[in-house]
Image (cartoon, rainbow, N blue to C red; front, side):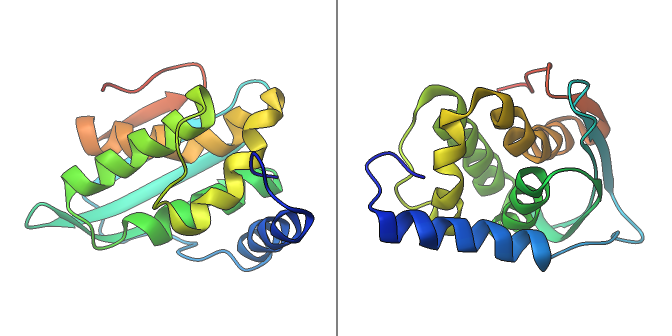
Length: 156
């Protein structure tokens, strides 16, 4: 899946994505939430609702809900796992690094399990599925909530 991946790595990446799709982490809602963002992909109908509670400049708690394909749900699960407990600055940087990996062929170094989604970048129609939860994250961190689509680019 990832550029230059061996068949064994392809299988590992596929298993990581399927595991997050079948057993999503951080599924549900944060209540009460400080940040609520709705995201949708007008091309395929994927929807994500992202809720976060912020404390002392960090993402204290995060959860997602909605419906979508395996890539969208796995990406949301992996994103929540990756940003929970991080500072707003760290979460924002991770969001931009993930988007760069998917949209610009950026490096997957130090992205952990998120590297499993790197192979999706070779399938243009699926890139938006993987990026949707990240657009919602960046919108929430930068504006404190709202609605975002796959067609909008969050602030830098």
